[in-house]
Length: 241
Ligand code: VGL
Ligand code: ZN
Image (tube, rainbow, N blue to C red; front, side, top):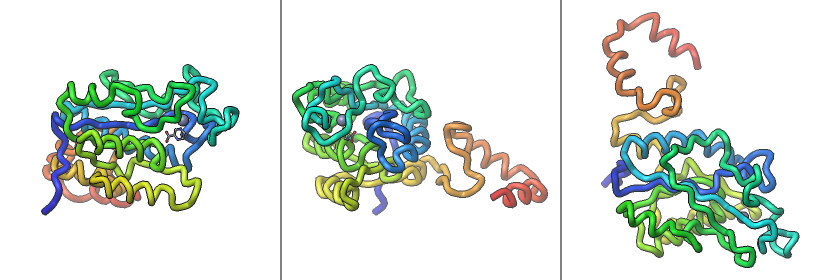
């Protein structure tokens, strides 16, 4: 049986750590990290339409955090509170209604999960969220630990496979992380799976605009396309890609 990934009120979107320091040009760039942004923007629109909650976690370290090389940790200093590197990436279109969850603020404690030392679980329960859709950065660290904690806390989890990217310090780290998340009971879906119940076509064809540029206009576009005489229009469109 096909899984139902249609988004409703008891679902929530968790966007993990889409911050400048994890993107191109940042202090701890995740290879291809920026590529998750336009996809997440589409999920944001879908969740908005469904009146489902949108949460964005951010790595929010004090300058002397234990995970920094300067303190004997493994990472270059990154996502220091109130620096540009800790800002959400400017291309991420977070709605004003999104709930921001800051994490890993204890200087002495390594923390990767969005649930670790935060109110995230409480906030989700207050919104009656039973299922969380998780995407963002990085697959092998904060996404993984957030998903594993969500499962432990009793949430259903949908891992957004097309909206995650890994650090891959070891080449198979992200793949291993995905296996662990699936082992824990997380399901995997892509934008096409989530759009499908709405009758929206998947992206990937040359005519498909991102939802963000023309929010859910596909309904109208489809209708108009049916009414429009076949011929020159069609041709111009197909020649474009
Ligand atoms: C992360 C490494 C260090 C993450 C945070 O967001 O995945 N990775 N701090
Ligand atoms: Zn960190």
